[in-house]
Length: 323
Image (cartoon, rainbow, N blue to C red; front, top):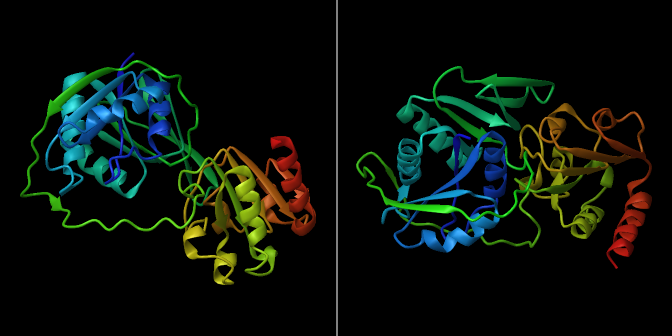
């Protein structure tokens, strides 16, 4: 099987970002999953046990003392080095701000084809074929690169096929980074995390509320169900505009695009702008008192009823099953 590289993003605190399981699972669908990580000298070995538990069969650690001071360039050099040494046919990155930046620059360096925002991926006749949800989710299309290496960014949360733990082989190399042409990081300010809930982007489960909740006080029902399921909290734009919740929770074309395993919509009518941001979810459950709401057109399971009656019963049922 060919080597498929997966760029593992690492936080300033040295922790592996939550996109790592998805990227390694996607790499395993194409070939041998290789985790590539750019770290400060000596810091990469601490990540080996976790990456092995996520199914990485090989780990390529590229060390440079500039990884914390330069923007994207260390990750690009790490992938260039890994691609040259491991004879890879594909390189996978998260469709994050950093991932898209690295992907575009890397494709130029390697003279590779570039595929962005894939929601699924497969190997077909030795070629990487990616699936996309486009035009507000109205169409599902496929793309491929006919010749040469392929760089792909994957929508966060789109693939969730956990791999069995592996005992990886480890390669540690030193890389040099051109500082004159690199963006510099002068200071990093960590944003305070005010919630123990999963981050909306990349969450496996999402519970969203819409204008049908009626008020900011009633929106707590969404939070209660999310906490019962261990899910992230989302919302429609209408709920944000009405002041029920902050804009950071908005799911949709002008908000966050999510692709969780489970998406529950409470009191959301399902306007096309909202559906564009969530309809690639694996399972969609809609609860709305309007049986003609567009959200039911894409829901796998629909309940026509009052959320204030249905959801408390659902929370009670979940609580009883967890006892």
